Length: 217
Image (cartoon, rainbow, N blue to C red; front, top):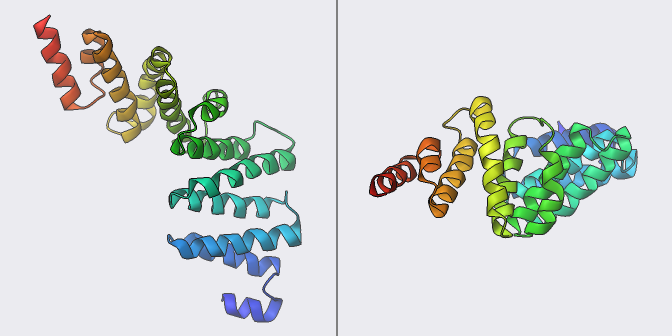
């Protein structure tokens, strides 16, 4: 199909580039990066940088680079995408902007740029974003707060969000477990064994440790 469109319409026609983008979505390898990059560059030239289809290709490329662990390359694309979506909808709080900002925050966390990530993350927690994005942001915020020496704030956030994550995602979801695990570990470090035992979100080993320490008091 792609070869037929290239022959009939040309390699840079918007319909051809749509097929290129869809083809990139069917792949999970490095090959998809070249396809998304081609779609992004072609759409930007043909439709403009802030066009919805251009932004979609930018998002696809950023997400694929992130999935491949290429955080340094994904970060500026997420930042550019957030700005482009804001221009497109004239709304800094629409879902595409917030999702792109979440992607940028993830890149910063993965790059261990904790303070920069914290500049983005807390405002995002006020919004219910698609899928599990909101609770992923909670985990990243907890991690960043702990990394910059603010464990009490991290624990307060974990305490506040654990019940909501359990209700939304289920008690066995990895994100719920990560929030609970931090809360248990923090409680164990600070000697609050009742909180550690009652939370139980750190899994059987953490719960057993809390139970043992309660008995020894």
